[in-house]
Structures are given as C-alpha cells and as structure tokens.
Image 1 (cartoon, rainbow, N blue to C red):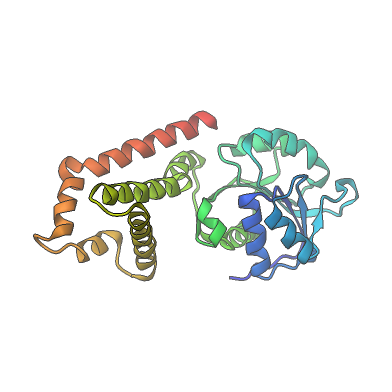
Image 2 (spheres, rainbow, N blue to C red):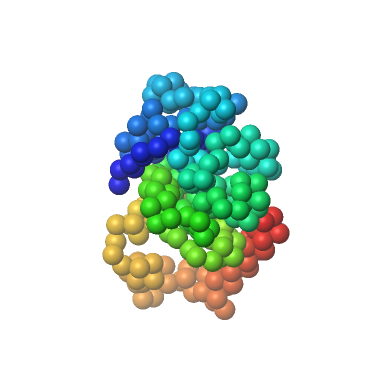
Length: 272
C-alpha cells in the first residue's frame, strides 16, 4: 500500500522505531520534501537516509507552515518535554500519532489541547524489517480521513489493527508489544535443549532460529490457522506428539504464557 501525503509530516524521534517508520514511508512513496525530522541525536542509519533523500532535519519550528501530521516516536520519559517543544506545530487541523508505550490519550491531550486529534499506536520491533504489528486507538476528535491516514502511515512497517477501547492497550502491549521477546526466548530455550542433548552450540542455535523463522513464514503464507498447522506436523505416536504431551500436560505452556502475558499487562497498566 502506498502512503499518500498532502501536508507536512513531522517525525519526532528517529531512533529504531522512528527510523523504521521513516524508511517505510520513503519506500512506500512518501515525498521526502513533505517530511521533517526532529531529533538532536540521530542514529547513523536514519542520518544516512535523511541525508540521501534530503529530508529536512531539525528545522526552526516557529518558522514552519502548519503541520498536517506529527508522529511522536520518543521514549515515554521524555514525552512531556517533547510536547512542550512541538507546541508551535500544533494547530486545529493537525493529527498527532504517538507510539510511546504507556502514554495515554488523556495525558497527551492535557499537553496538546483537549480538542486535538490524537491516535495512540503500539507497534512492535519487527517493524524494523517491515513485519510489524501495530494496534491503534483514536480519540473522539480524529476524523475518518485522519484515521485512514494514520493507518496508512503505520502500515508502511507491517500490519495494522484498530481498537475502540483504550483500556485494551495493556493487553495489546503484553501480547504483541512484548511478544517478540517471548519468541526470542523460545529460540534460546530450544537451542539450550539441543545443546543439552549433545548438539554443538552454534548448530543448536542455528536450527532453533531457522525453525522459528520458517514456521512464522509458513503461518504467514498458509490459509490454515495455528491450530491446524500444529496438527499437520503432529503424527500420531510420533516425536512431535511426545513433545506436545509434555507442553500440554495440565495446559502447562498455556498457563505459563497466560501468567507471563498477565504480568506484562499489569506492568503496562502501572506505567500508564
């Protein structure tokens, strides 16, 4: 999907996630002349892209024309300071998109103005390779056109879904926001088990890693759901069934994952 911009976009923060968004927008055909980046300490990768595409960097905000979109890709702990900095850009028609974890719509509105159109988004780290999962929620001032634009901007780095209840963001954070870490730890555990059975450590890690990568790609391409794909690889009385009997004994893995995700959701709520 190409991203169509008709007004100025300001990206505040071009770190890992902001940089991934910037790269995605450029690849999806956004006119670099319509993009400005605000970041006093650029990552080298983003800096090279900005220089190559002649994207405006750290302009004088008091001299800027009205912004159409402001994307806040900064750490939550610096958000208050950043919101003070961008005050000259905020106008009656601007759309503000925040990807800062734990920063609620109401908190943003207190600084930006009660009638500002604000979208809160939770992407995850696979956005860096264009395979992210972003879940978004809008406040009451976001128009249908602004919602469509926000969806297009985040779809440049992966899939997008919308929710209507902001309280669900804690569960979203726990499942998809933190989710990549669970998958990476699964790879670590599989490799460690292979090593325990006598595999050379590098080989154990390589086959565990590629198994997860390949399984994800198979799930992406297949019309079947995860449950069916699991059944397809499980022969009655075979090795996979033997392993699954351990993982499903008394719903062991399901209970462990539920406890982990509930812990992440609680922490997300505490940080909001």
